[in-house]
Figure 1 (spheres, rainbow, N blue to C red):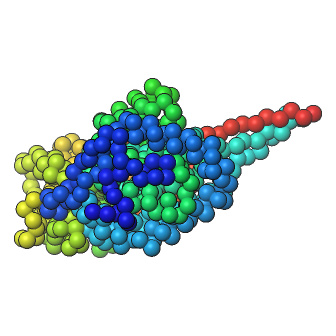
Figure 2: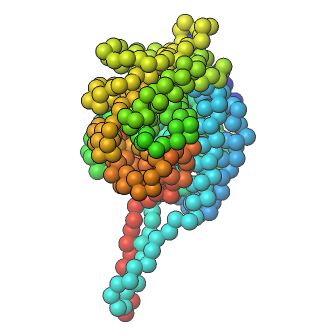
Figure 3: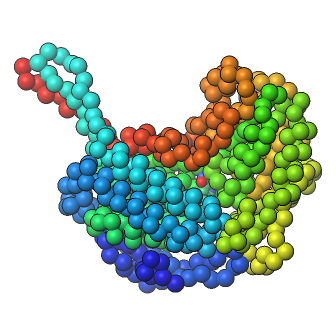
Length: 482
Ligand code: NAP
Ligand code: MG
């Protein structure tokens, strides 16, 4: 299999496609049918070392000398190439991670938007002058960290590469990217498009491989000056420990258990598509998935009935069939999600979607599943499931709703459905989340909107202009001139 003309058994290091130093490959599986899709490079610590050296060379060469406007121009050009290749990117993602084509295309569009947004922002980030003592002029400079490490999961490879690599390149860093071994095809395609757009050699390096090998080598590398990680809580803790050893900043985005609160005055017809889609999009494998629906007792039966009807119409099947839901990313993820559904055997499943009859037996399919009358402390209402499973929880007062919403160790996203403006303002402040949506959820992806969590959801902010601050280090210059 070729990707945009390149061979996925190669890493992208220093602007060249080269095999891993291990000389080994890993098998990539198509989760829609369990077949082998292709072999990919099994990058190891040596490949990470060479990537970091290439990134350092880029920083002391053409890339380090590029003006902010030139960096912006090359990012914009990458964005154009992403748009020109959007069908190929969507197809690759659909085959690799099982994402239905329409959703894969939306991810590719978001990748293009990140390149446009950060390309446009590159020459608009500046320092300040600070009033100080008589005879002094004081100003600040925003400087790149240097070599940045990006460890990306399998659920939204293109979006997560866009938001982290895009912001890092815009601010003049040089990147080493370790995609998930289950989802590296679009990362490799992105590197090829960046090369074609004229990104200088070494500014972006991509090393596919195992997390415990290539990922660990990247996170521990003493010359990597910033780490950006999205993925599970246990691995996030390892990354933070590695960052502590090298005393470098780290951004962690570790998922959540995000609630939508439906009050007695909510417009249910308006809310319904958001309530359901936020749970089943990407088969629920979304860090900001809304896996808990909290409903005022007066509307509980209405909401459960409407959601049950919507669930019964959901169809899961092969990614290229482009149904509501594709397979999960792997058989392993399917087993995890099914073990969660089994933990709900004491609960009532109110509705399930269907896996289409002709779905290949080797595919990683799970029927979307809705549970109602779940108590807030139940494992299904507390743990991140990362599958197409939602729970509906009743509440009777606003205070109770807030207590339930804030009653998990996570805090990534929350939303409120209410027409009461005062309540909207109160809840926007009271909810523990990095993003609060009022009468909507997810705001259509919103590359412009800062994003990140509290508690076990992680820390640091990506997306929007805010991400640019995280990828720069502030220097204060105090000149005494009399
Ligand atoms: P994961 O292990 O945390 O993987 C995320 C990334 O970290 C991948 O690139 C992975 O590489 C890498 N990695 C793994 N071990 C590493 C290590 N010791 N050092 C450095 N990098 C390492 O996530 P997962 O196992 O694929 O998924 C398990 C659960 O994590 C899911 O069920 C879900 O709950 C959560 N998750 C959350 C998000 C999110 O968006 N917040 C995304 C994905 C998963 P390899 O995959 O190549 O090993
Ligand atoms: Mg795969």
